[in-house]
Length: 636
Image (cartoon, rainbow, N blue to C red; front, side):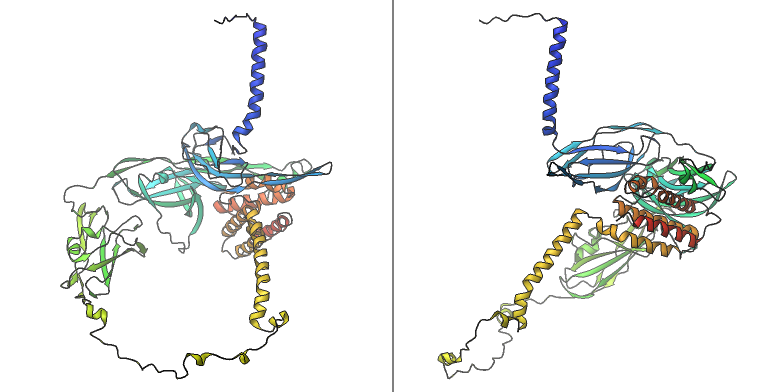
């Protein structure tokens, strides 16, 4: 039997023992954690943690330890609209020499960029995000975002309007978005939550006639773009400049659907400030951003909310519904054609069916032909068919059918049932019957296979070669004595090719591998080299635009693409603040940065507001060329 003695420990000794244990545990964890965590790590960087509802901000996931990680899944983020903006390598290498010993350090990295737009106010949390690369895994830390409620101002208002507030399931409704502007702005980002509700609506784009003589702009919307029309309008007795666009909503289910307010985020001109003393530290930033009265424009981030709407969607009535009704809503017409019309039993016939009627045919599908009883009784109809293609105001479908009997005289009319919203009743349209000539297939007999019924005439008799097989032999005198000489190889094309082709192929493969390695090391290097010439061409084309606003819009988009290619960053929603830091690190002079900032500001202002009185197309082009020359000297 063992006895254990309990040794009393006073409070002071207890603290010392606990401290030693904790110190040993921390030391052990410090040694083991790199091995447990691996070389892969990830962290989150955000452009702002204090934003308005509908104000987009940038979230970056910065990965260390890998230059080719998998794109992380952000579907677990709640309360945000997420748009992927691309990724880029962030690797670097350095060489250190200490006491004659050279050490090369390679750091692998990658950056994923996302645009997040908050959809509700309050404190929203971006949870831990997982990044995978090969067999390694890394987690980011959670990030909290404070989201404030946007407020409408006297200078900016946003309005939503529906073409109808009551419709049926499957009936198109036009959503109009109009932004009223009473002041100049630099940029704009729209957030329309209803356009993300793909479980409730089919979303389509209406046709826009850009040759109507009106002014149109392509503006960012979510992860894509939309064509907006510039005009004027009155609201509450005040005249505004307007920017408006439309979307088509086609309800998928019935009920009272709430359409949440949309928002537009912009940097708005709120006033001017006087130029400071030219000898202070802020001289250059003031000098290059003044108006013609020597004042500097002051811009402030503004988020404008819209009104909310409701749409009542009705179920289609049960009374009078045809058995072959497939859910088409609107007024439809159906036509059909077939080729060939003279066939044998079992031969394929291409049946072309065209549907016309509603303006928006993208989600429309042709009802299954297997529901057409007269057609099924006379033809074999395969399950597969080609998808429809829109041509003008029609959507055209093709289907292969095969006649089953020789007594078939026509392709019977094809029925199309639909619900007419004007009359509130079900209707049916039919194609015209298509005449056919179907012949009986000829049966192949054994005599056909053996060739008995049509004997083949015999050819000429084989003549006997009187010399016999020995006639083909020759004596040794016919052999020619040829001396093997490498120089003689070059006298013939075949010999020269045999000698020269292998080294030429080797050189081609060698240079191709060098080029491939360079491109793999820097995938965007080719675009960066061509960026300067592309920008110069764009500036030249901008001088040929009809208005100063259009010239500045072309130059702004061209500069975004140029800087994105040069700095290896996504160019989609690029603003000056995104490129100011990287350009400064590459040695771009402060005055050049001020010129570029002024160019961005004036182009954005002209895009949404009025041009300055002293603007001219030649002046804009000269300003852009001067900035390009300065940047090209540093951005190689």
